[in-house]
Length: 154
Image 1 (tube, rainbow, N blue to C red):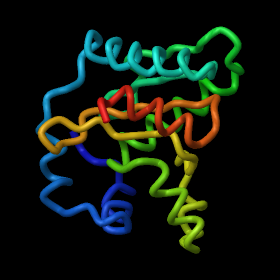
Image 2 (image 1 turned 90 degrees about the vertical axis):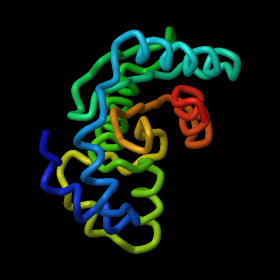
Image 3 (image 1 turned 120 degrees about the vertical axis):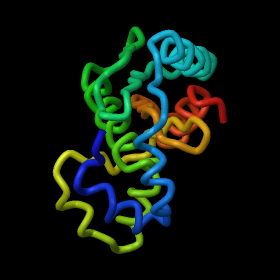
Image 4 (image 1 turned 45 degrees about the horizontal axis):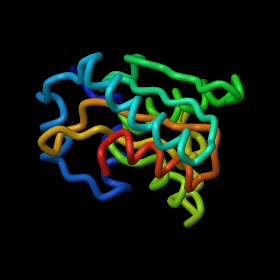
């Protein structure tokens, strides 16, 4: 599996090393059972917080493994969660890092098609290797981040 062409510049921007980039290509994929468990953890926290959100988990290539939209969550949140998950998997970093880079003046990121620069997307790591991405949308930035962290076990 090859990295998207835009991954290497983002890796450097976000401080990821070349060995991490190479290793990500050899990780075993995330399976459906694990993705469902992760999504369940996210939904449990979202319910406890009273936040109707969408949770999407994608594989390393950005293909949806599972997508869940809670009752009361906006239909738009499903698309946003998918974009966050895909971005986190492709870039190998939290979408919050990209949002922070924009806030710090690295506006060139705005010209990259398909990136979500909104807090709430996290890469899923296995033995330090990116194997998937999780995206949460529908709450505040803090809610989306915390619910995504629940999914990945942080």
